[in-house]
Amino acid sequence: MAHIVVGSAERTIDAPADEVYQYLADMHLHARLLPRPFYDFQVEEGGVGAGSVVRFKIDFAGGVRELRMLVTEPEPGRTLVQTDTNDSGLVTTFTVTPQGEQTLVNITSGFDGESGVAGFVERIIAPRRLHLIHAKELARLDAYAREQRVGQ
Image (cartoon, rainbow, N blue to C red):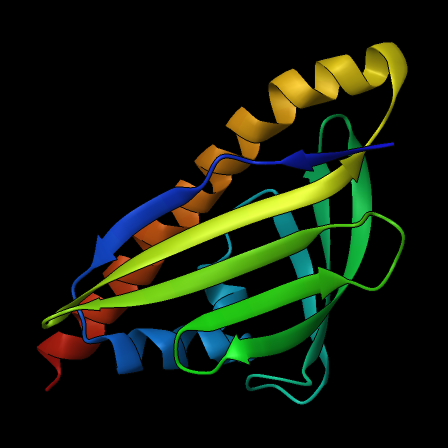
């Protein structure tokens, strides 16, 4: 298997970094931010930040994968990491960078891909598809942050 690092998606979110990080760290809210092809999202342990464990399914590349992600915070308030405890090797990192009253959020994923011809195809298709999925998630995050600011 080869480790595939997916090109990052990033977006400026119209909210301060501390608020944005709280949105990402809240796994119950995070579930609402995930676009298709993610579904059947469940919080198994915790629910906010480090130590949380979530389970969900993703319909990806012609098959359904069930992922069980452990959440860590290598740099609380700035970096949140979800690591699959199953065998996919999927690691998704959310990085929050303050920009005044706005926040730059970057999502990067990597996973253990197939070898041979299947791996070649996966290395071509997966990065583009995950980039689009992450871009949709960031758009949903921005929309949510804007809704929260209207109420203030």
